Length: 266
Image 1 (cartoon, helix red, strand yellow):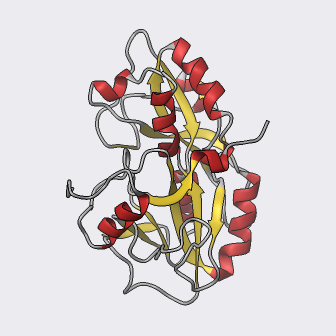
Image 2 (cartoon, helix red, strand yellow):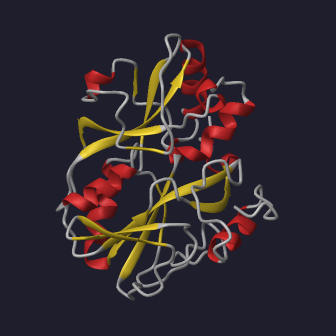
């Protein structure tokens, strides 16, 4: 990562990603600004997919949907080009991951519709500012992603299980995190489960589906699970669409929206 990039400025971060000066995960970049999961699919599936997201909003909180064929997302920032502004993309054909790319200009089609979902990376800085202890970060661990046994509500070809992200917190900090994140449903809101991973179908907490590093739960901590936008990617994979494109794990779209703009009003 180029340290000359002002990493607290979302526009500068997007520009650096577009130019290839930032190629890694986006966690920790532009703190306080919303980061988004992305899914791009042919427009013939867009209505069913939009309804699927509406019915499963905890996991798939849509913040923006593009016009057909338009790579811009003007409600998130006026300079976004979704073909270049993620540091890595995953390309799926008939439900199978076929390639990972750093831009998708050569794959872009005027038939595509982009969906952007709020991501829990967005509230990590808030938790720090509000005094929620995150010892897992201090020991070099990261949030981890797991499949659950919780069904989503199906629409058309879209169905599947809820995917969750987990952060280990002490019981007192878990309570604080619930109180804080409840105010931000557009970035997944409150956790959907705490403790006892087996109750939601997670057999081995030490074997996540995705994680940037190891993720350990210490004796004084509880695993706290938030619904995760990877749920939408899993639904699209299982629908076996001829082609769909998502962000690669942890390589999100950094937007100009800040948390206060999406805070739920009392």
